[in-house]
Image 1 (tube, rainbow, N blue to C red):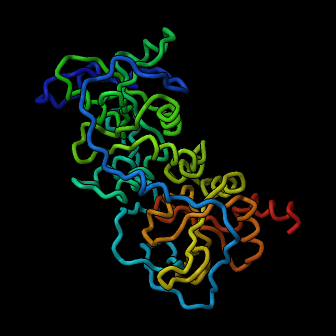
Image 2 (image 1 turned 180 degrees about the vertical axis):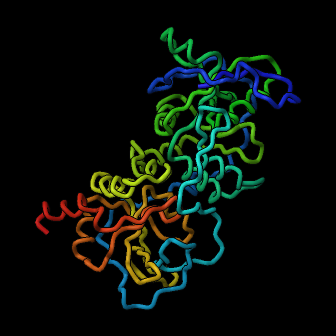
Image 3 (image 1 turned 135 degrees about the vertical axis):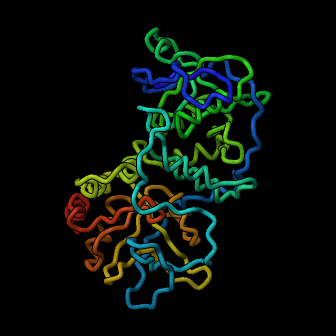
Amino acid sequence: MALFSRRKKTDDALSESQTPIEADAPDEVPEQEQPPSEPVPEIGISVQAFRGVGAAAGPEVKLPDPEEPKPSSPVAAPRPTASAPAAPEKRTLPLAPALPPAQTESVPGMKDNVLLRTALAEIEQGATNEQLIGVLRQMLQGHLFLRVNGDARTQISEGKPLSVAVVRDGERAFMLAFSSAIAVRDSVQRETEPTATSAVAQPVTAVLQQVVSGNFSGLIIDNASGVHRAVFPIEILTKALEQADVDMTIKSLLAAPREQDTTQKVGDALAKTKVWVAVNDGTGGGQVGIAEARTPDGRRFLQVFSHPLEVVALGRGDKPLPFTPEQLAKVLTSHTAIAGVLVDSAGPSLIVERDALGAVLVLAVDLGD
């Protein structure tokens, strides 16, 4: 948590009032008080464009025949090459590296959401729906910063609801959230009147649940970043939250620095968490079936995804289909040539081989397969 105050724009150093304050943030964020006066930026993402993301569970879909020729779809090493049907070469969503980015702290003691900050930096004036969806997928992990009017530590210690900053447009109210504590400071610097503001980090699902359950019209990310800000209407946030794992277990593991047991933790999580697979229905002459990937040495991996937006990010035109742990277990036991799974191939991604999927394979035994 950090406390900010408005200062002259020529002063680039952090003031003494911006040093981190040791305090614990609450699990939930109450509604806001004293919102800053600021126009709401134009919403640049179409609700209609998002409604089709994520199909309902349908009939079983087979894996592609490994003997059939595979289309050319190169993926940056060390990821396997995709054997799913290729789409046009043009991609509108930026893909992330396979490994998570290095962690940074733009304000000491407060870790940035680097994936979200990077995704926002890549959008420009007139960003497409696809690009903004790409920002949304990178937002769905880690944490967001909330701007609190006043000293959040004092409000917490006195048992008061946090005075979370919003912007209003008539009857509409948009909560403000940020990719880093420095983005909160930039927002404060836009104010014409002196103000003291705290930055509080919260898990992204806690923020989205507050927006969805409150009387908000949506969420604005990094409002002081000009063309690099993003505005998401409540309808989009509601659907994204409905399709997400409430704990963001897999996404959080993939976004965090790799540890010795990361692969095993992801393998164990796959036995408890619904994922998504990429399905091609043959449109455009592609190969019908669930997308898989191959390493240069020919090993096959089933592609699975932590959220349907991860499928959309690949730009191949595949349809996301929900996949339960039991369905994953059935595929792995029925297709012994599958060496494991490739999780979130748009990045950050991870290969989980069979020796780390014991908890998943046990499910097939329990089912009598």
